[in-house]
Length: 161
Image 1: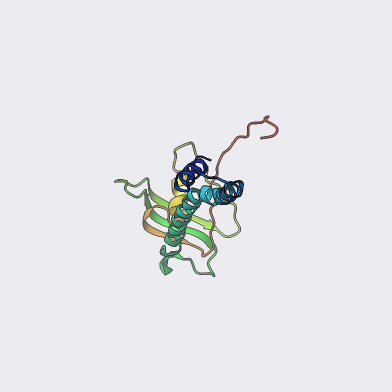
Image 2 (image 1 turned 120 degrees about the vertical axis):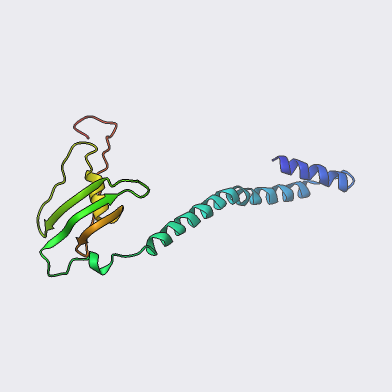
């Protein structure tokens, strides 16, 4: 609205101070039609920036190296996971988080990783799937998935949770 008033003042000063109703309505309709596109420009810049970041993350994921042939168990194996004398280290950490890991998990078996808080359950699973620096022999079958546990509580009764 301030820009419309400013335009009227400039128009009045430049054209001997005569403003007619048809000029006023024409200018107001132009300003109203330009209002939404001008409001959308900052929003579109933000969306484009988010799109660029998302595409960089997707590109990084797609260009990440795949498992080496020595890390994949043969299809005829009875095992899903095999680890022998493995050491798992978080990237940038000076010492291994877990060392001497020996683990075998057979196909069609139910396996639970149980322990107290901070005992290395998440580190073990993350390391086996390649999320940590690893030493030793770790082999997985070609289709392993990991669904991390995310605890959440609804703002509701105990029964609804």
